[in-house]
Length: 448
Ligand code: ATP
Ligand code: MG
Image 1 (tube, helix red, strand yellow):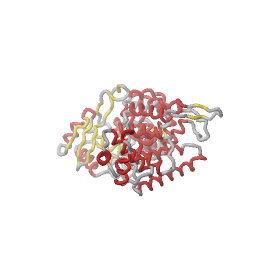
Image 2 (image 1 turned 90 degrees about the horizontal axis):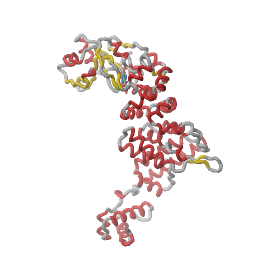
Image 3 (image 1 turned 30 degrees about the horizontal axis):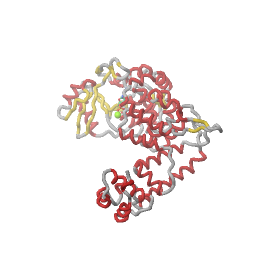
Image 4 (image 1 turned 180 degrees about the vertical axis):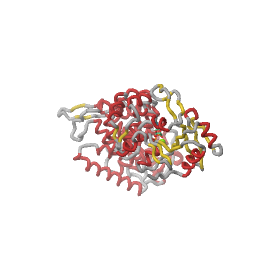
């Protein structure tokens, strides 16, 4: 076992040891090393009390990050290192935060308060791995297991329920049976977790390699904080295009799109309006006319509740609004779409449509995917030929139009839009003379 620990981290450990304290790297970085992944950050745990950390590093810049919880940030050669005193958590309040924490000089006590066995290992460059709860075995067997009694650990801090799901999704692990049972049993405690924390765990979960399995196996927990998804579960679509029920279709589409959170959220909510709009025709075939609009409205409410930022909300809801719309295979049609959504969102919309397609019946997938390839070819041609599809690309602006036609107020905007339409329909060249000559022929008295 030879971990590539940054020199600054080794130095911090050495300095603490030289001053008579124990010190180890701990938690996520040890787990990531053992998985041959590059750790994103390094946490150091030590027997030194916060004041002792401060005095040990008196020659260095230190920041009192969370002194009450025992954390000091030390800057060594421009690297910010979080050093935390071995700690035992006191009574938990509200299923989230310990009321108080106690410091200890015993490493095992500190490892014991950590959430999962794979996150409860420490490592020292000379001593090697400290693994009191068989974390290494669980890593090898790809298992997420609580340290100690799962029910107790989830009751202390219900965020751990979502963390278990997130780690299982990201690492492609299974959740050990007792841990799983306790998570399901205590799912209502999720209601005590802040929306911001749910948001950040949900994002990581959705981007994980096993998101489909986790969203399915833990659906009862997902429905606890997104109850709007529950009606999709087991709802048959009764339509030859579909082989899955609405919930499974949703999950397959989530897992079928690129690892981009905007796309994954869009897929998670794109059909959420289907149960409300479901009808059967005289042949018993299911339809959900107008579901995109209901999905959009519900998604907006959910995303606001989960405190997503405005850009995410507006992009996701736009993509949901159009996810089921037809895009004709013509330059004119594609330009109209580009005008409506902008190129970036149009490309995302194509990804949404691809993911939606991959979650349909086998027999139509290939043909539909080819269709989207053709749309991309049209888009490429439009770009290569620098074809105009927005007002900013038009060869004339409002000032030109006013000068030429004498238009006033809202008239100018209407004329510009008319010119743009003519250009997008290939009925007018995008050059100043043809545009302004045409503008001159417009009868202003009939505009407003
Ligand atoms: P990543 O940083 O990749 O999300 P991580 O395991 O480093 O994963 P952090 O949130 O950075 O996760 O936490 C660092 C360590 O602190 C964890 O590995 C775990 O040992 C402990 N920990 C974090 N959150 C909790 C919690 N809610 N309950 C118990 N221990 C926790
Ligand atoms: Mg971390």
